[in-house]
Amino acid sequence: MADPAGPDLRDPAPLPSRVTTPLLTLITQQSLDEDYLHVAERRAAGHGRAPTARPQVRAAIVLALFGLIVMTAVIQTSRNSSTDQAGRASLIERINAERAVGRSLQTRIGRVTASNTAAEETLSAVTAAAVAAQTRLRRVQIRTGYLAVTGPGVRVTVTDPESGEEAVRDTDLRRLVNGLWQAGAEAIAINGQRLTVLTAIRNSGPVVNVNYQPLRPPYVVTAIGDPRTLQADLLDSEGGAEFIGLARQYGFGVDVQNVDDDGLTLPAATQRGLRSAQIAAPSRPDMEDLAP
Image 1 (cartoon, rainbow, N blue to C red):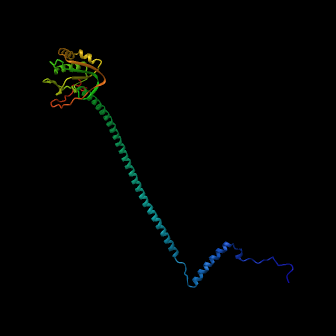
Image 2 (cartoon, helix red, strand yellow):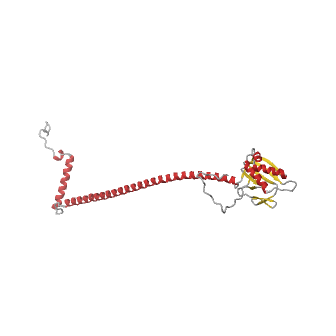
Image 3 (tube, helix red, strand yellow):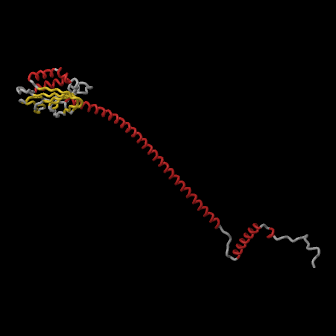
């Protein structure tokens, strides 16, 4: 029968260690104990031996492999560094070489630019000289009769006398031409034959020849000049006065007409090659024209 006073709680029994030990510590201890127990059982059964130097050997091998890896990395890094240094040096050398080439090209460009500038200046001077020479040539050709011209002037038509006893001769036409030159004519032609410094007006029997070409009357003498003064100056010139006197004496028909604007056109004379004449050096350096 139970004690009415209840159980005695003054001296309770102590709790086992597995109850009071923390759970994490208990798990660790039991795991280690089981490992030791397992090793002890294997050793007692003859299946296991005491640990030898194998862990140290393994550690040494691991350390050796690690050292080899580190050494390989160092060597590779050193090689890469040498390669990088060599590549950098080569790149710097190429950059310097390209810069030298660039400086050389810049110098060459400067020389070529200066040469082009000098050539352009020379071309401008030569072009100006050529234009001036062409202008002088055309002026000389006009004055010498080797270039076709057009302009105002006078037209003088000369016919033989109606009596038929006399005919216009080469000397008569020469006096008329000389008078026109003296009056200021710039270009003269007779029946389309342009007069030059080499022109010959000669009679061959009864026929008048100009530039060795036979002409038939009437003789039309065209002269380019100022029509306002040319006719009057012709009458005042020595050659013109002589021609008018002969025309009145022998009864030549003379008809003088002024032609304004560009009414007269004189052809160019046929050029003749010079066989003996040579171009002489100018007497003065500034001599530019051969005008009469």
